[in-house]
Length: 312
Ligand code: SF4
Image (cartoon, rainbow, N blue to C red; front, side):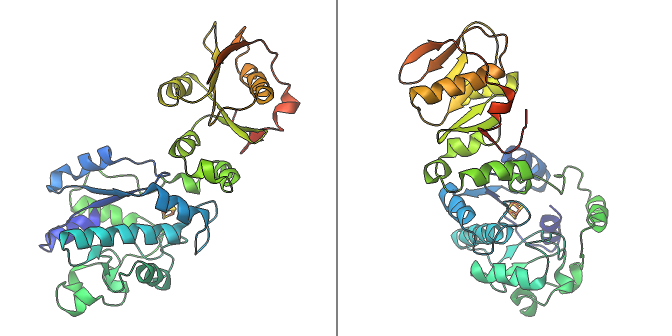
């Protein structure tokens, strides 16, 4: 938002771009609302398959968790380059601040590496840190007055908040968070899936990572809802997948990504029962339907199947 206002104040037409990833929780509806006062149209780009490929095997590795920040930034830059070429724009502007993030913004060398791999060398302007970075092509050519840019560095957001106030920007995103790949528990769940291509290529499997308790039984993934809202979400959004639910009272629901064999269904039913103690009978609903009468699994046994911490 700050970079957008700076560039507009310098007289440029700005086309904001939101690059969606399957793991970013902020959404475009909120962004569109925040951009309304500036009379700009939000462009959106995403590519599930390309993102999953980079996540599987990031050239520059992962951060503290499963966050491939440098490769992810290269992906963002590439999408910006695509838009730049589609609309005939002259260069790309970002809100990056030198030294703000430990991985992808830690040094000028990293920023240059990202530019190079996105084939945008010298074509990325970072108005918030430009004065403490070498001149870009746009500055050398006199397209931008460097004196009207800033030299903000480091992790504190103090200067940015002061600028937001001076520009009258009131409605903006919290600067931190939003990416599930930096969450240790989420990363553990995802890591468990990394060598399972069929699940990794399945957007529903990725969506399911965001909710419930996760189990692996005989190679099959089972997700069990933790509360009423998750039960509703599974029934509404994943109701076409094989399910175990209660027949007679409100309870947890378990969902598989694909239909397992009978002995796996029975093990899963005992897990669902563990979280639905009031329920009498359970119902399996897949290519066929049948009632299951089972006892809850024992606490010491359930841990043999659980993925990614207790999260109960
Ligand atoms: S925190 Fe997440 S969205 Fe941000 S660069 Fe890293 S992987 Fe990408």
